Image (cartoon, rainbow, N blue to C red; front, top):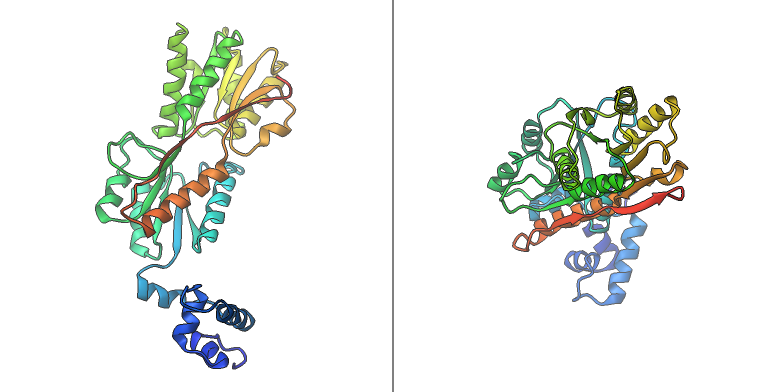
Length: 339
């Protein structure tokens, strides 16, 4: 085999005295090929540094075995996207194990999701798409369904359309968090939301409202915060609430960064978390286990969610008539620091 040339099937076949067809089938573990021959072919291919020609395969099958996940940046602040790391890890591992590669299409917060999706489809090159940051009756759902493009959503939209999704039970988590704070005697409870109008925030607000209504507690709009909660923004918001004449004594916290900001605010006010102020937080990174602060966390396995997203997407690509995956994941309650 010529030095510095890219090895191909014909070269491997010539070297082993086999047909190109036999070599091709052996590399795919074809049942019609003797196991000894498969072993010989794979050994020769590995020694030669053979890599399948993805472009040629795409021309033959119409598939590139490439998936794309659209992941908008949360804010322009550092650390703002920390929860995406385990999600990307899960998606990457699941894609690799199934013989696919994963590309991440990152967008800025102010970009229009519909325009980004249309641009990505125009560029081509992906067999299926993962979409995130869902809004009510998200227009991307019918757009993709009408074009027959395989996709899966991280989140639900309230739409009656039949589409694949994996979601977190954000309403249930917020309901449980509010109820647990009420059980601790918290009369005034703050709710931290994130991006306005997305389904994540809408579900959390619904769960909070349901728990407060069930307890006969009035909802004070001042207790509901909705903005880009970086650590700094969270600290500022909680500080303003604690300066009120009738401040909250409990917080349903959006995520780990919101939690770090809240801890900074309570520390500056001289409050002791777990005694003067109670927090229930959603934890997607297991960070809360290492803070040594008495709080309650709803832990969500984002690696498993990433795996489910990719597995559901690949099912659509390879078995388009199979039922679409529709999965809702609950948070696992963990009491930190002996609470």
